[in-house]
Length: 194
Image (tube, rainbow, N blue to C red):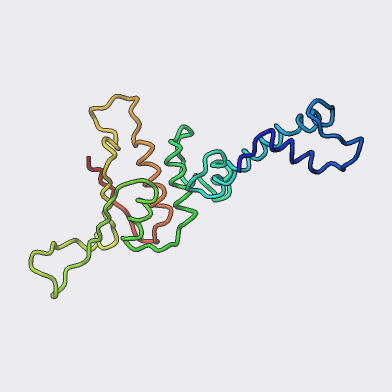
């Protein structure tokens, strides 16, 4: 696309009737009148080109707030200064979400949100397992271990000062989102590895 002002002027003049009163010389008022409207049409066309990118959540930037409102985001209390990329990841993830609560699907959900995680289930020991399989207590059957990579210092420690948050905002978003969609009776243990 991308027509110039001169092309828009000629397009406007082509819509005018023909005759003695409708001469198209560049020095006459009719040409100048059409030339005055042409920049508005050029800007409208450029805006339409940009709007094509806003139709999909993968490429949106200006309509990100509208996408979030449409999808009911943010689901978890994120700081208002959240990174635009994380907000876009959340929009893309929820827009394409298929569902499912298996460990691999939970890992995919976290990956779609922009996190690197590994989800482990603790299955009970039985006679068909090898002797080296760990004996988990029964309460661990309903706990998924989520190891998150790439968020150093997610939790506050006793060595931090009082200005350090108890949990970083990135970790809070991940934990809140996963806890929001968990099955009743299933729990998560989050481990943050560097």
